[in-house]
Image 1: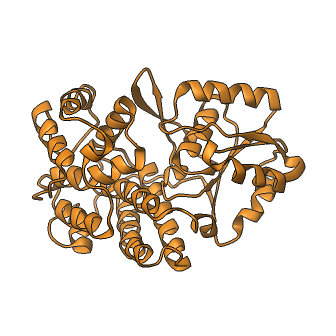
Image 2: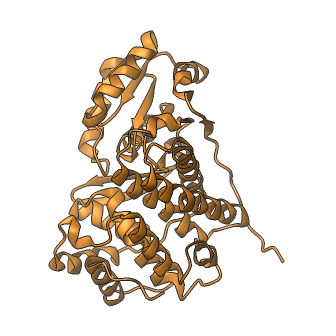
Image 3: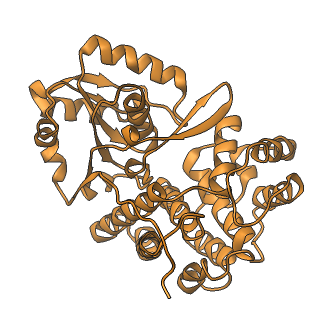
Length: 353
């Protein structure tokens, strides 16, 4: 029997296909805009400048200071650039850092967003903004945060380094894994989560074998859309709370943190939600956490928090922060259990469940 549920679909317009980035200007105009500010990180500033040139008179310039974890002071600086340029929309080119900046601007101004992802982060299809201030990362939800148009062009991911492809993909998979046991899950979100996980199960090993595999790149981007979309329709739990703690308070790299924590948080919750996590066990074998750990190891992704520069002493403070204002979670948590979980992740131990 199908249980009662509530489902709200995403209002974002999804444009998927090789070469679709050429339609960016047309989508800016369809949004009723004519003064787009192109956003990027400093690393992708040249790509952003080329996109700005392609937009021609529709572009009012480039702001290339997007930073991991979306610091509030960077958003403040971007707001000044928005005012000076007279921008009426933003075009975010890049990964989660650039998407986060565009969302932060939209949260303050409700300016329309066109996002062109170049990684598999998936955050471009969620109404969730994570931002950092004073050494703490907090999240907010709101309709204005969700981008209006997302252009998925697999050709833009062809140059994504293999290591970043793998951690970015595992980051997206974490969205789907938490969606499976979310408090407000529903049959539609669970189907999308399982399909997104399956897409990465196919594509990431294929990219390890040949990182220039265009079909695998497209499959991974498809998975990113699915995994991000389910995160946008249901709530977050322990996994995201811990990753927000580590990233916001210890400045650990976003995708790598999610990649390392995923098997451990799933394994932690597996005893409380065995039926909900069965799709992961079916896909990856073993128990859900162990199966994900084995998959991560097989493709050569990072597996230990100590490799990110965290010390064992940091784990005490992290467990304290993560349990101060915890997100809902299917299994109850306390400082001791989270400290033990973090110890396993720090060492890179294989989860039992």
